[in-house]
Image (cartoon, rainbow, N blue to C red):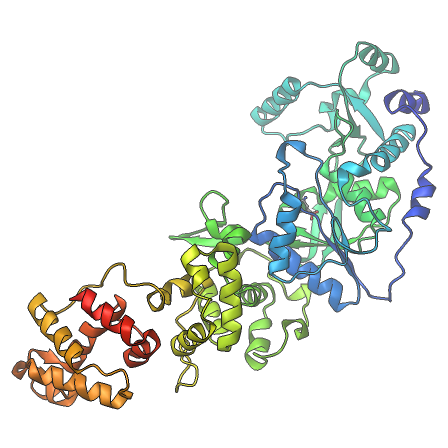
Length: 543
Ligand code: GLU
């Protein structure tokens, strides 16, 4: 068969020489040991925890080694493409402080551009043409229906599905048959002519999973689709070679395709990058563990963390806890240090499924937020509210002094123990709502309506905003005593039957009336922050 003529017929025209690409995208001039890693999302608009997981690993490994992290957009599948998806990727990752050195829409060196696969069509085709010329790729005219039938036939016979060996019908078409199909205008794809034998095993060292054995590929995979756009497999080989990636960290769902990639790098004459296959994030669902799912688990989407207002450092701390088995211990010893000082290693990553537990993340979040100063919390909440808050919530920040007082109180700053009530910005904003808006509803009072009224009336009669907290509390005790409640807790504990309740019940009535809630930080301070007029108005309204 005249492969050269066939290549010319299938991909007509002059393409730059293969050597010219090697010159155009030369090996990177980096110090020894520096790793070049990448994030290669498809622009589907859905950025998930798995992406962040991979991003953190790639970022750490690149920057720890003095290397490069770049962003490549894998947009070969137009059906899945969504407007604004690249912006979404960048926003999501910026929130978690993942910094790219180069790549799509990144202000950096563009030696290895273009960063969008659709703009790289010429490179892919030049190499496909070369593979046809050397007899290692061929056109396949099988239709979707024929391939479906083949798959069904193989499944029925319990054989491995796919286009290989005796099933690779178009592999053995004669020159005459090929040209007949082409003349008839039949659409075609280009397949790799695999030379692999599945009886042969390849030993392979995965940067994460360690020593693994894979079977040689014998599938004649599609490398160029009928629209002239490559498949993931082929684009991966070309791009990671010419962008000079040294370490490919990707999801373990790609492990099954590794034999294909090994064969592709070999047939193209490229040196293979190292690979690390990241294990999937699992969720405990009743008695079983399953993969986090887009449909069932909102926490899979990174959008969720921004909308809820998770503190980025907390999410990162949790991710690192999941990613590296020795991180937790390091962090316990170094809680104040920048996370970058932790020495990340791919070898310490989990080799099988990682359990993602949102309760654990929430605990870490509470802990991280409890380390912030009132000013830092102010900035964090404000930036969340500016983007996601209601109009009313945006207004909370107009009186900076008041907000700082609220945060100081609610976070227990200056107290004996820091409080850990805040999990996320949205939850915190909800928590502090009563400082800025009148209660929309009241938790249930534990006293009857008449008692509630007398307590509140008693309070209004005695209330003096100039009272310090002791004087204020003395009055609450008086109100308690006047209404048959024990003024002292110890009296109540000694003979509960002698009282209608204790001073704590009286304080609770005032607390609910002032805030709508039965549980709040110190009520005297709350009333001080609200001021005389507002405190009176609220007690009045509650009556
Ligand atoms: N576009 C692929 C994905 O989103 C990238 C996999 C890889 O990193 O190679 O799954």
